[in-house]
Amino acid sequence: MNFNIDKLKQIPILDIVNRLGIIVRRNKAMCFKGHDRKTPSLSFSPQKNLWHCFGCGAGGNSITLIREYYGYSSREAIIWLEREFNLSSPNYFRNRAMPERALKIEATHLENVRVNFVSDFEIYESLFSRCTLSMQGKAYLIKRGYTEETIKKFNIKDIIEIKNEENWLLKKFGMTRLLKSGLMVRRRDRIRLIWWDHAILFPFFENNHIIYIQGRRTSSEYPKYMGLCGIIKPLYNQDVVKNLPAGSIVCICEGVTDTLTAAQVGLNAVGVLGALSFRKEWCDILNKFRIVIIPDADSAGDIFEQKIREAFLDKEHTVEVFRLPMGRDLTDLLKT
Image (cartoon, rainbow, N blue to C red; front, side, top):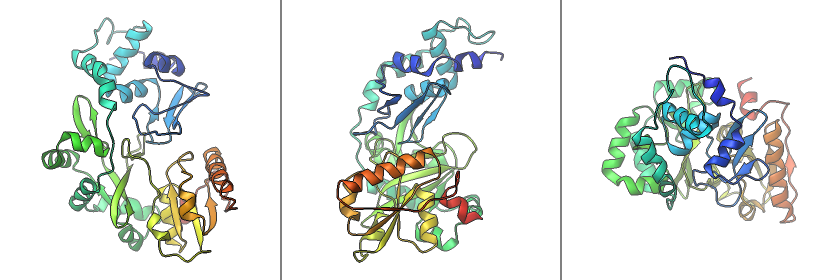
């Protein structure tokens, strides 16, 4: 199999986006997976020819964009690019027609993404009741500095037998409800879990119910963090502020793992998934506390800090910032 993948990856990413009909302004767009409500989370880098969604964590090159957009296999994504841009890869895909299955997916794609997503704690809690934390998952967390007490407190589990759980969920809840819950998506002409290999599962609780799940894939492949499709991302560990007296220090961290780190060292911490994901209505919950932002020391962290500062400024509430060494996050410090 000798085909020119590099040639396909060099197609300008914005040219591909234009073919897909995605509306881009200043290299930003609403994610095609349907989870955005107001703020665009899909970002394109014309210089690097890459894309990334800060909402669901998906991203990559031109081939992965087509693969994720339509739910294609890599082979089908390559054929689509060749067809649309009149290219040929030597010896393998030359003169190949688009497979009938892929054409069917393409034709029904818009119908598939118009799902009325609804957080469904019964489904999420049913999945968690079947999951445990394997030795592999526990070793992964311990290696990153988390104690057994923290792991147990935050009810962290993992999922390994993906197909078994898919079959059980479909039998118990049915395809339509699972799609609406964001836990399963259409992929390769089947209804599948959003994680396709081993993932650490972090539950988000509200009033003792699981309202969201983020998974951290343990493989070296991208994407690593994947949350529920189409479900608005809540604050992580938001119940920690329910019984805090006014004036208490509350740290706002960037992501789940930094929140766990802050909590492990004794801080009252909540987590925001992504630099652009902070919602102004959360200020009403947090406004009575002394707020300390802990952003990562990178460009995304700068955006994270600015977004939260602006939100609290509208409420006439000042915030403080705990600055990390350049290029580090809070979890890095815990490991050292």
